[in-house]
Image 1: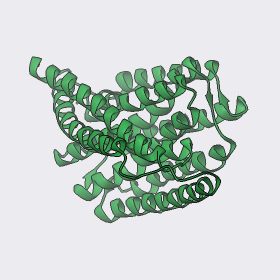
Image 2: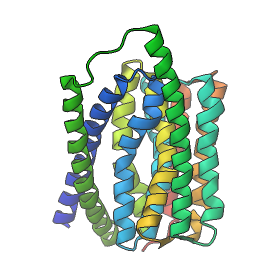
Image 3: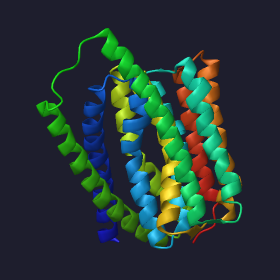
Length: 321
């Protein structure tokens, strides 16, 4: 048990630090392209902070723990909007663009609902994994075209930024490489430690994935969103939250299914855990609409309370392993 605790703590620290360094490097490069903060949040930042979820879920399916893999996705999605979104809104109310409510938030709902028919058979096959990755690729292409349009507008409005071999680019590339290494090692350590501890105290795979791993791998989103909100970069915070949920659902689930097809419990295939994830997504959107595109402190407190209720449900009404 002491070794398992050390692995879990050390793994989460590596996940946190690795993702933080990765995001710093990726954002530094993206900013030189002259794209909007929302695009940066939806793509570079979201993908960087979602890397722990991907690594942890892949490690779980390799070890034949499908409920941990999908529980991590569901739990991370709930944690992103309720825990991270709630905390950030308490610190600094989140401002949401009108186009985000019209495009990105509906996209988040669509991909979440897509898992219902795909997981109906209680398995995720390789063809289904490729389908999810294909949808993810289509969304990336669409976002890239939007970014290119912004770059053309910016280049027409102002002179070029300068030499592409600026020293800052090299430094940011090093940050990205170091971040990826930290994420890979941290995910393996955290999964091994969490599974050992959870099994020892009688938690099921579903609870391990939805609580310990979900919160641990959501630390990068939390840190990034808090820093961005304090600096007034609300588009990065919102883009990170919504983009991370899209990436978790499509990229993380799809990649895990391609690496190793896996089985899931009924609770994740249209059961209560699935609808909790959808309901929290709806709650976040309603908070933004009710606040006239601002998720205020009261809404943040409600989101946090909802996350507390989610944890009570997991720990109280989930059968032990």
